[in-house]
Length: 561
Image (cartoon, rainbow, N blue to C red; front, side, top):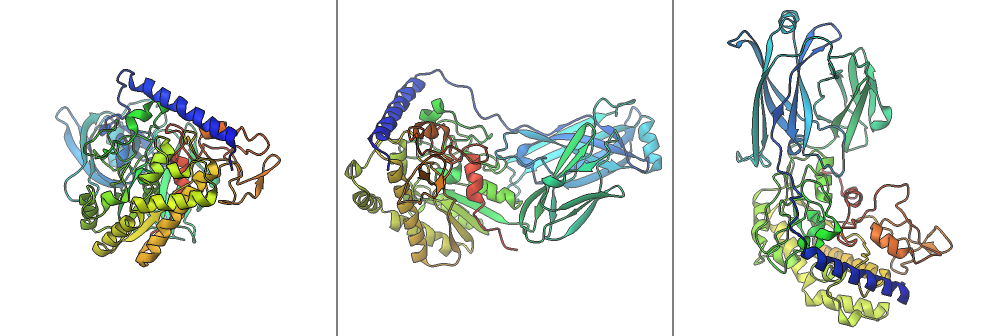
């Protein structure tokens, strides 16, 4: 357990935090952190040459990141003369691949290059000066109800440049969906320069090779999820997304609190920084989900939520979005609201209308994290403490925590939410328990006490789910988020980094790790193997980072065919 010195260090850190927040609140208004969605933008066409010497039309199009993994319609025409007499037209329907998988994905747009292969006659006419006319459209209709969240169209007529090309342009390979163990053979991308393609064998879970001008991919037999193919060429490289063994057409909905919403990241994938915390901390009531990965609201206020057009799917931050992305889900909505608690989602709660909306949309899967508020959020933010817990030993502390759970009606409110969802849907419901985070703003609690509090909360969640007793209600346990010191008996210390055993290399926020360096003979910094901490620092070390959410999402079972 953390000693008096460490309690004092946390108190000091908390006071510094509060002073900084007061200063931040008096600062001038900050610029927007969320860029508006970009529109579709058609680039200049190029001429590619296939292995048999015939020409291909190559059309680069910039798309909003929200359209990654979705099917778009593109009309490409070959025209000539001042009156743009149409020689031939093609209509393409392709599922867009957005390149290398990134978590989080902070891009606002990506480029996909469409290709139309030509016969000998059309190849000659293109090379003799015919023009290329393109109508590219991008429609984001999340639930395919005919009411798109985003719509953009661009029109362009351009003449491919003559002479030696300045840069390499190659057509993109669409996002592939294949069965486990299945083999797919595709033409290699056509370019305006010879790329001499090679494959990166280390980039794929499956088997990838090039043979006779074709790309051959064989999916793993015992794997479901996202894979990618990396092609390497002179002056270019290309990534292609592959979804393996996942059923199509799934409807996925999410609800819950800040852990489902991805608090601490804006919808554009940008992380919240510390001096924005005061603007972002949930309001006292009528939370508007500010500073969350599924929301467009940038400052906390009492008012309605303005959800992101794709509900935070493309930024790949929250565990719900990462799970959906892993299996190629596009019919996804994350209605979680930072600051909310179980009673808000239960019948007669202020967000029950969202619960009913989710139920009316007949989801196959419902994802949620719920139950930490209001108790744990108050404790972790360091602004309200349990008087009975101060200076108590672990047995008394445990009794105090359980009493607080009872005071806020945790069990009955969780039971009400679970029962409502089970009664009104046929969905499989994944209930994610809470990760362990030790914030450097916790003023009155040791790391061991915070770990015990989280463990007791997770036990309550599992107990209520077992009490409800449905095979469709499945509790998911996140991996242990190592603190880097001894927090026994809550979690065993079986790893030695310095002189004394600890729970493992720390994955806590950078600020918390700085504080824990006071354990000079035992603290073990991390994460092991490098990479970013699993907990963000901008909120004083409370919510998972995108890396932490990846760990949580990895524990959720794959959707079944």
